[in-house]
Length: 325
Image (cartoon, rainbow, N blue to C red; front, side, top):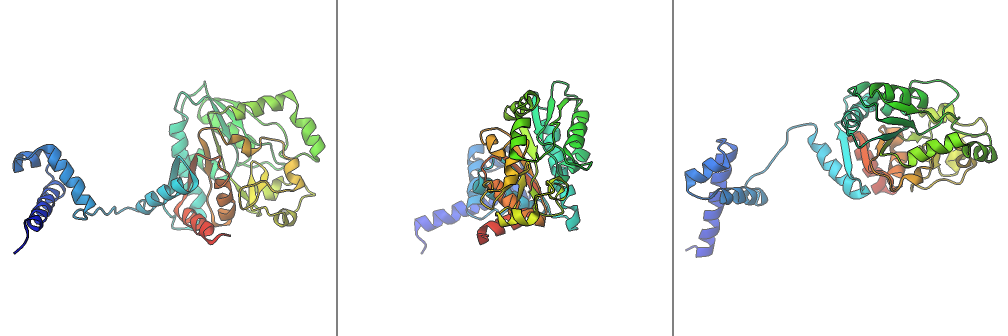
């Protein structure tokens, strides 16, 4: 003979199952269920919660986005991020930058409509270029778009000048260019250039920016900076030997997110990314298998609040970090 407690548990389980069936299969509202069973709506609500907790209700989301939601939560917890958006895996790997760019474009379309965003810093990159193609235009004449990086010798649709111009035009916004090369010929010439008033004013705007977006570059010919930006006397091999896994705003970083000890970092004309640690809405948008080490390193710097990538890259970054490479 069953004990009273066993009977009570079985009856409560049956009650939860009945409510779950009426709510999820019969499509009844919580109020209708309460009236039908002669109980309070609060009890119906609590029973649905208990049914989910006890496994009577199991939710399966049939969408390619479902695995991304779990990854987003893991990235938030592991890297101390406030917002994470992960796009589903593309069918073809070569479309990763377009997928990441589309997600970034949607994010920026909403962000740049917020009236409190007055100063917005932007770097360059393929993902950022793709984002501008996905953005909805808006009218923000009170917004100022500020370039975060100097230029490279060869013109490009993903260069600092091009990207800053296109975003400002999309938003009907004002713009400020960083009118200098990315690297000076020596540390001394960098120091001479950077103390000029015009550059100090731009750097000050970036330090005060309400939001900033940037991408990372790998030590690879696939990266615009490595391919076109490096001074002629700086080799990829010397960067790798110094521990570089890639660059952020022209500064080369190691696998732990620290700046490498190399003359190239003393020649960057621009903002040191470590100055952004206390800024809100610092956004990183990047994807691609060749960028895994530098994405991992950038996230460890502790400057980013928002991260946008794709599922394949996200999974690879976690695997990379778990391997301890």
